[in-house]
Length: 165
Image (cartoon, rainbow, N blue to C red; front, side, top):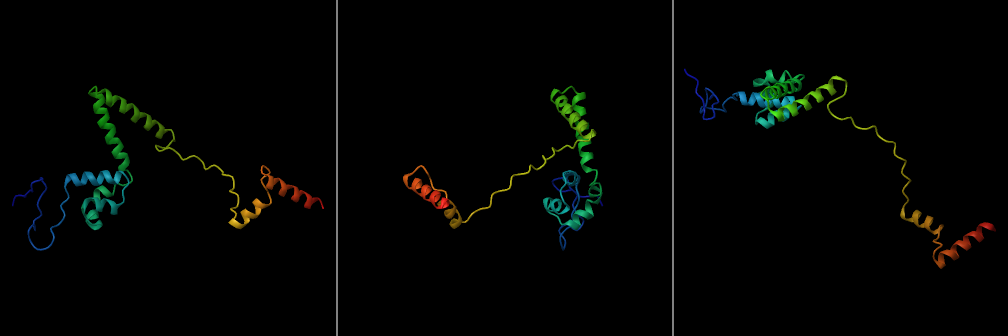
């Protein structure tokens, strides 16, 4: 029996239209999506949700893409480099500029620096003064009168006189 395809070119499962939900059919487009999302560091749960499938279905149909999780990012970067090199060989000026940036990022990675900028070391902040409550703040303000007003001047004189006796 010849394989039947739907309007989008995906194969139609054998039990389509029968009882139960038809089995998920992994298309090349979905395989490419899974490979990209794995390279971007997405979790299996997030990838499955993006494809509207369950995690067991993801593991069943896309196990070959999931098993390269450790090297997926490197494979993606290498594929990008190949495409840029094709543009450089074709004489595309913007591809040449992008390829130069690509080489600089690669050189930074080779010489021990990471691709993402490091966070600066936390600066020791001075300790915050202890917060005073309303009553304590009012008491402290009462012991330090404003000498710019006549009442404050009088209070200052009284405080000085009481400390001298």
